[in-house]
Length: 455
Image 1 (cartoon, one colour):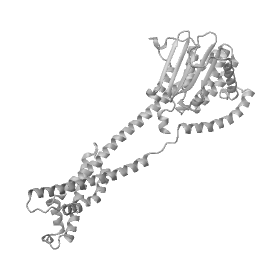
Image 2 (spheres, one colour; image 1 turned 30 degrees about the vertical axis):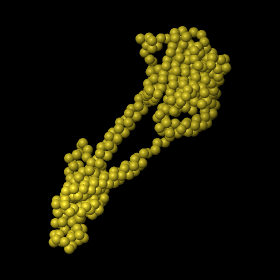
Image 3 (cartoon, one colour; image 1 turned 135 degrees about the vertical axis):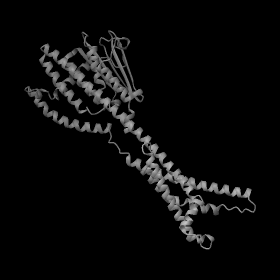
Image 4 (cartoon, one colour; image 1 turned 45 degrees about the vertical axis):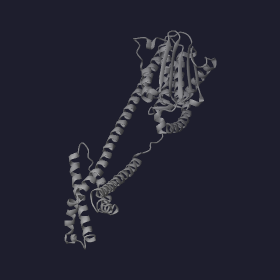
């Protein structure tokens, strides 16, 4: 049979039988739940199985931590970054305002030189006046604008209320600015001049309306508020994207859980049919043996039912348990060859990836076949990808070349989960020849992006 796996050997048949015996020795039966008296051999096996469960539980905990590290809460880091970013935005805006003052003063001096006679240029004096009276107070007012923008962000649902709040805050800042500068000017600069006869509040009116301080305050306030609210809109968009991402992730998890839940009933249905056939044939011992192995199989699947990822070795162990169940029915007719490189046994794979495909090969490939049956399973590294091949010498079929072919639950389930977890990063190829057999090849990344990001 074609494939990159080594040919069958008689030694592998012995491995299958030994695996069957090992599974029987550690199996806790379903007889207790059914009220059937337990055999002495089964009772003695339960004590050994308890210690094995403890050992397995500890190993399972470590493996779960390896595949799913505890999440790190990013909110404190995000809040700290946003505070620093807001401070930088305010500082940058104020620096640009002062730079505008410098350019404006320089243009004034150039205009005076070109248009006025006997003009004495002075850049430092006018710039110092604008800096002290107009610009410096805004170093104190800017945090108020930031607080107002955080308290009343301008958003589609509340923009009238937010604009009114910002207008009132602007008016308050302008009055404080004008009165503060008026008082300072009255006691610091006005004495000894003709302006000394005016009251501080009159100086405030002169600065606000005569020297256009109010217009300046409106421009600076609008600039700062616009800068901060643009950040608010950016945060809204980012939050919406984050919410959409979380929703998509949750939907993906629910879809994976739904696909995973399809597997257990599908397998149980096939297993019950096999047990019913054994009972009808009067092979009660083999039927009982199958029930014991089945209980062990489902116990392990329940232990990992909340995990989307397991190691390849865990998945292979589940396949071996399934093969042991099938071996009860087929006996020496079935030969299974397993070749798996040690370097890929710890690689993460989707839970219940291989068992449905193996079951599909046994049920549809060997169901109608007379005589010996051979199944090959190989896993190896191919660069940064994991290559898995499953081949059987069953009856084969046309599959996708047949216009009436429809994928069964197992095949459709596996393909759906691969698409959900890997997207375009995986390949799934199925080839089948009537009378020769069927071959499935899967290639996936050795370290999926989701787990790489988590690590």
